[in-house]
Image 1 (cartoon, rainbow, N blue to C red):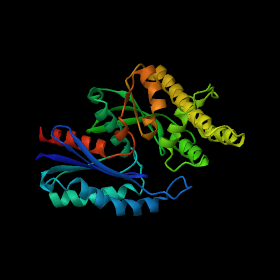
Image 2: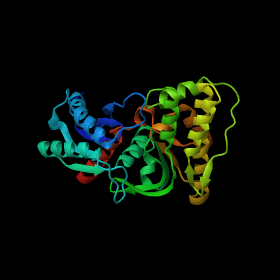
Image 3: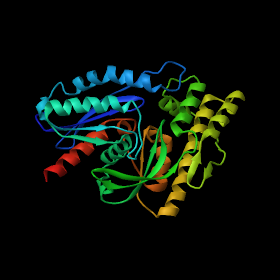
Image 4: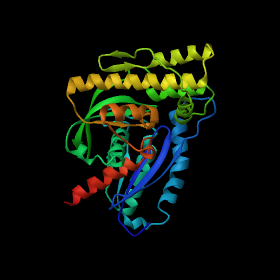
Length: 317
């Protein structure tokens, strides 16, 4: 990396340890590593997540800054909670928060705190070159293993003011994908492998109509449907395609109802599930929506670094 001024972002989510630097020219450099999950299991206890973040974060950070002078880091940003709402808390974020405080105090630079959800939205804005979204309201979907939500977003304190306007009432989309994948013998997290299987299915596919209550969705049904398909000896390719198509149609119906309620606002989709090429193609073609590029879709610190750069510049002005 050339001599420059850098802004550090840290994110310790439930399944990924990640650190990122962004320079004054908007170039992002990031390191991230999934937390290890035992074969056949579909998640981690928070105590295990905290342990693995503690073990991984130092190495990732040292690798990231090995070619720069730490004195060139001008501000540190970190995700401290899942969502920017009162009472939002998850122990795994304390690892990143405490590390960020140490780095900030040592380098004597500002520390800015954001939420994990704001980081996802910012990463999608950054990687889709959709900076115009910082100037007004838009609808953002955050769809992952831990979250299936739509929020009404507008800029606020260089993060976002987010109002929850739709959510899952039971299973998250990423959970449905992972549970289906583990049932099929895939390695957790299962999104990439499930997508590969689905892309190999070329036959006819007609899925059951999604279940919505108002703008909110219910996704536990797809897990039961996929179990029945598996018991009836349908192919792994068919089951994978069915699962993803059902989730796509559910999110599409949610989108339609939200646009009816809030008007034709811009749409942005973030989170690991929305990196799926099958689902993404539908929303790009139908709605002209903005998406994070693949490396910025799954949990990452790039959005936190980007928000840190913007906040630091504002504080200078």
